Length: 128
Length: 128
DNA sequence: CTTGGAGTTCGCGTTTAGCGTACATTATAG
DNA sequence: CTATAATGTACGCTAAACGCGAACTCCAAG
Image 1 (cartoon, each protein chain N blue to C red):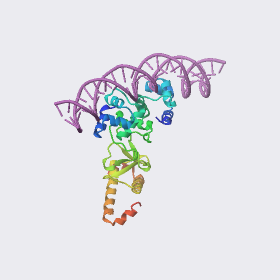
Image 2: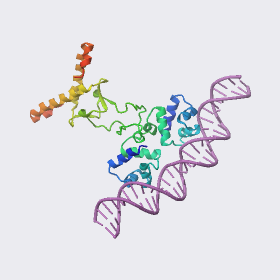
Image 3: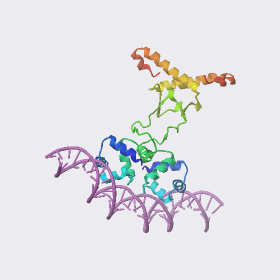
Image 4: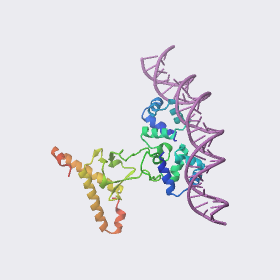
């Protein structure tokens, strides 16, 4: 298990050892043992940790480097087009180039600019 | 650990208990214990199993239901614009309406149509 | 100064992982 | 049809280690 990752995840949530251990249903010293590397969690424990920290067991174990976890890919509700990094957009199965995405962004922005100049009623017909 | 998944993965590769155990560097009886539920693998062992079976620890543990695992491109997810369901696209933090997305799709399609009619050289300038 | 929360360390009791071994059950010969 | 081997299953033993409480230190709040 990658100790730094576990420690980082807990500290980011500003949780104490005691509170985290309580969440997991184990003793403080037990959980402290995980973070110090003195003990290794059981399969059950590491699964609970992944649940609690909202990440994957593979991330905790260092098998993958992305912390984000999509149980049913429903974790992503919103996807910002201007900040696409790891996700490729496709249309009819064919991926869009970065240039094309930039075009789309520019199109949306100018479209909004124009709409912003019109009357508030324009809002009602935005679903064209 | 989901026993059926481990058994299924091994049998699909037509491996014997002995051979699989050898690959993992453990005793046959030890690995057999995993599949029968009599023993639970250590963190190290289950990591090796995920490597060997080319899947994720989360899948072996039943935290996810997709068996496929792409270590090298694990973060390059593809998102098909024409099949957006629960995911909302945003630009500058503002969500796009379904109509707007349809516009984008139509735009990309016609753009491709036009490109398809041109000479192959057009490919070289597609990143405008 | 004192009280209490946070983090660290350690000894102890109990659990158990991993192994070897032995047995049942097919197949692969000979 | 036997013998030989491979596959899968079950179990006892032992060393390892998990999990816990307790005993610290450190530090900030009262």
